[in-house]
Length: 285
Image (tube, rainbow, N blue to C red; front, side, top):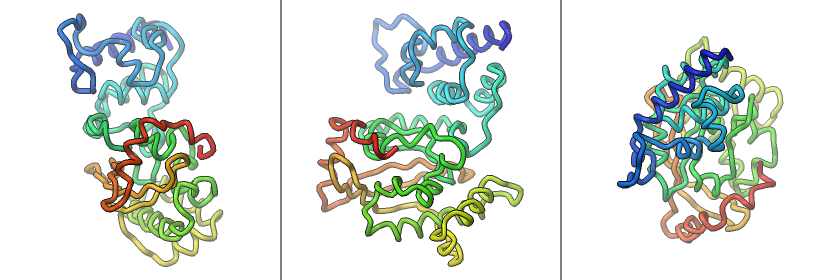
């Protein structure tokens, strides 16, 4: 990065930080607040960065930010798609393709996710790449973000990595497999014929998973809009939840949130997620 681009990136981040009201992203706007918009430490917290690192970025110094950090900053600062692309250009990083783990998340979805503080929630792509999770979703499902390539898709991991299946009881695996395949077929059909991302994923699964290939021949198609799921939690045991979906306008992203199933003890177990945290998920990553 050139000195000029470092300076421009810092100035742009500062301008985006100053336009956000603290209450819009879950912070308290008290009478002692001396800065307009968010403080630098608040942006760092939202993006999962150290305060010192973010301070360096705004000063136009420090190391070149990674694609993952730029994606996190775009979400923290509620950037539009054009603004997100701009910071990638300033940082001399390639703009991520849609559907990757660094995909741009619509600010409206990020805002909704921020407001769902008492409910596990996450944003995923139509190919089941997890883009961002709130703290309760990480506590319920483990950290599903940060993976690259086809392994970023949970559908791919479901059919290629047995560890991923520990999330659901063995008796539910057949149902989950059929639902994943039907949803993937629906997502692929909705995409342009020139789109290679879904086609590549399907081709790879057909070649490496006999189970996927067998289900694929049934030609079942159905978006996953409302599911009732049983989730194996390593500390709390079986948690039965309703999984609800809010789709973006183009269908490429969906906000998922989980509520306790009526008639079960899941409400109590979901309340305990804040106590358990993510400490039990080291074997499920």
